Image 1 (cartoon, rainbow, N blue to C red):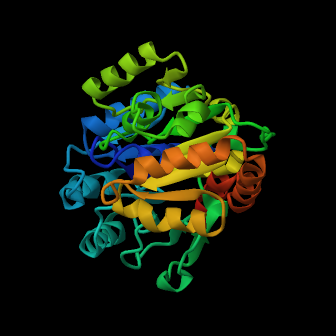
Image 2 (cartoon, one colour):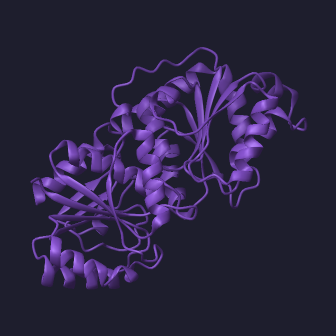
Image 3 (cartoon, one colour):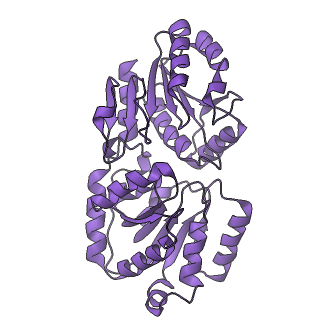
Length: 361
């Protein structure tokens, strides 16, 4: 039997899909390397999301439901204690914004008593405190290495856990942009996509130049797994009115869809790393606290254009549309951004994480 790895991650309408999505990628690499990866989930909502995302990837992942509260990991105990005592995993990877120093104290006590050979890992992008683990992963472009004291530190863009479909893709920048890619990840609580589409296709207050340049741009729109039903219906009504808009749900080959795009709009998250790995010129915005600082890093190195935080800046939509206008016939601008993006993101980050986990156990 291969090494047994537990992965604690959750996803829902509040915390979106990113935690589960990136952990699925790591789980696939662990499986390919002969390990047995199992998800440890708080509730049925996370289990249903895992099942839906697994359907898109065509891969089945084993999962255990703790029936705890995702936002209060302390409720994981004593179930975790019983599981550690009976199963003794080789490694426990944690991807949750809600774990605390007190949580680690209880967990490490439980490991010492029930499964002393179990190693710990954490995927961090909040940098709130030094997690007392054996492996820490932070794939932000700019990371303060000194804040971590884990024996193994996997830091920087080369460790972005991207699916294999995003490796070694030949991308060509066209002279004139004809196709856009729009995504907000699994959720769109501020209806950014709908507001962009309305600005381009229906808001005649924007300038005539924008209408001429963008009105006939085709838009591939990703409908996230946790979009509200009413909002999805609004998007479908827009797509019926304007044939240039194509909505995509349950996408199984995201890289092919991205490869066709001449530029993209996305929220900060895994999708941004995927677009950069391909080389798609991208304007990015933030809509959560954990996104703001790291997306500014992409802007700083010229790999993406940061439009602002939709929660605070009412001009974000207009900035995005203006950027689109400027990009249409400016191929040198898009080429420079594409080149910079491809430099900073590794294409085998998930494999490197999986290998580090197995080397430690």
